[in-house]
Every structure is written in structure tokens, then in C-alpha cells.
Length: 375
Image (cartoon, rainbow, N blue to C red; front, side):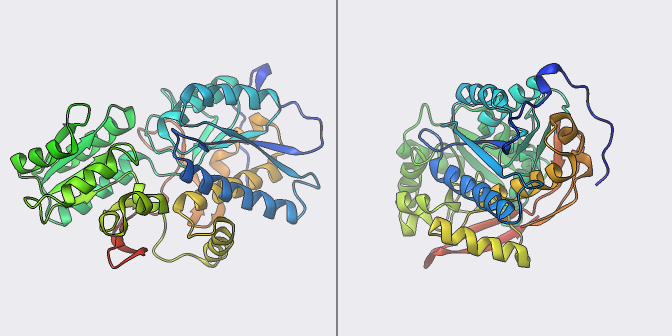
């Protein structure tokens, strides 16, 4: 892997180390209000990859060490964790599931000159300006949600309602859907869940003659109550309920919504139709550790450490050299060959793209997924 010229480095970007291990800082939501199940899957993937690296000799004989901090979906807590981990001498930062939290953490890492490989967050504007310090594995929201809009159009949906709460992430997603659908003669109406009850949502769906309702809201509430109300309203027998942000990927969704209501809710996930031998092996190991089928988030965690380990082997633990190496990455991940590039409109080094699917849980077998659309 060739190394391009290093970005400018400030004194704070030089990595202190005691020489006993090579440290990676991991930001993960492990407690509420963060999505703790997603955080557990992400951390399991990170830890599996670290263990495999260490089982094969580590980093030139030094163990790879993961310093984990719980963000609890709190941007301020995440930014403070970046400060702490930078002071502890991590060579790089990794992880985070929530986009708004990742944006705060990435901004702090950029200011300090600490390389950050973002695992899961999809918000396009992770940073306000282009940065050499940050790379991302997850597809940008504009890419994945456009594919989801194409799925809706292909299924004949042109009158879409979105139940939404205030959030940069939800607002961005609604805008992507609106623009894509409008370009093909469709429309999107927003239902503000600060003002509506789940029963009132049903009234609005009837009034607007919507054929699909998308959940751009928190889980389990109000998402589960909305699903329950819509499923039981006799005026809405054929309406599609979707969750592009991926809530139904996790077993907690079925536990909360129930086998019947939780099934047949199309969502985005970032897996190929068929895993490679590496992906299949890793999937088996993740299942053993999790005690359940691994989500795409667990694979994102594993791929994160795979990329960082490759960079650390060639560049050492120097932060500036790590950041300068993003455009030279060429690594086999569990979901395809990972390379980073500059994508128009995206301010970080981006893998373009991880595979994208629209899938749903099968109603008769909620533990099984059916692929509805690929992009």
C-alpha cells in the first residue's frame, strides 16, 4: 500500500505511547438512550477482529488493545470520550452507530488530529468541511436512502407518509426521500409525532391516501405503538410500513413489536446477497459470540478493525501516517473489497460503496429475511 504525503500535523496529533500495546479507541452506544443492541453487535465485531489480530501475532509483536467508551447516544459524551482517548495515546478511533453522535465525535477527532474510522453512521455531513483524518465504511445516507426510495417506486408507491421526530438525521432522510420521489411524480407528507398520537397517524394516512408509512422515529417508542395502531386499523389493510433506518434488523424489534407486527417491515441493511468465504467464517464466529444471528452492524465492526490493522501494520501507530494512508487502503472485508475515495458531497474518505439491500422479516418465519431490492 503506497503512502501519499502526510496531512499537516499539530503537536497534539503526535501519538504518545508507552510501547506496551497499540491502542484503538472504540466509541459504542451500550446504554440507553443509545441503541444498546446495535452497540453490542458493533462491539462484538470490533472485539472479534482484535482477538484474531492478536492470535496471529498482533502488531509486530505488540498486542492490539481496544479502549471502549460508551456514548449512550450522547454527542457531548462522545466528544468528551474522544478527548480522553486522545490523551491515552490511541493510534486511531473507531466505531459509533448513531449519526448525530458520530458527527460530534468526528468533529472533535478532526480538531485534535486523531484518525477516525467511522463504522456505522451514515449522515452525509459528518464534518462541515473536507478532512484528511476521517474515513467511513457505511454508505452515505444519500446513497442508501435513494436506493430505498427506488424500492418504493418500483413497488408502485407514490403517496408516502413519514412519521418523524426532530433530528438532523430524520430530516436529512426525509429530504432524500422527498427529492427522489418528486423526480418520479411521487410525494411525501410528513407527520410530526410531537403533535400526533398513533391513532391520529392512522387518520392522516387515510386523509392523504398514503400507500406507505415510513417510521423516522425512535425505537421502541413511538415506533412500536405506531405499527400496532396501523396494523389494527381496518381502513388501512394494504398499507406498507417501512423503516429505512434499519430497526427491524435487530431481534429487539421482534421482541417489542411481536412476530406478526414486526414482520414485513422493509428496511435497509448493508450486506451482500451472498457472503464470501471470509464473510461466512466471520458470520459463524459472530453468531457464536452473540448467541443470535449477527446484524450488518457486527460485520461493520469486524471490517473496521480489519482496515485499521492493515494500516497499522504498514504505517505504524503514527497518527499522521495513518490518516495519510486512507486513500491507499485496499483490503478484503467481510462484505467486499474495501477502498476509500473522495465522493462528491461527502467530506470524509468514503468506501463507495458497501452493498445495500432492502429486506424484510418473513411473516411466517420472523427469524428469516427476504431480499426485496438490491442497489
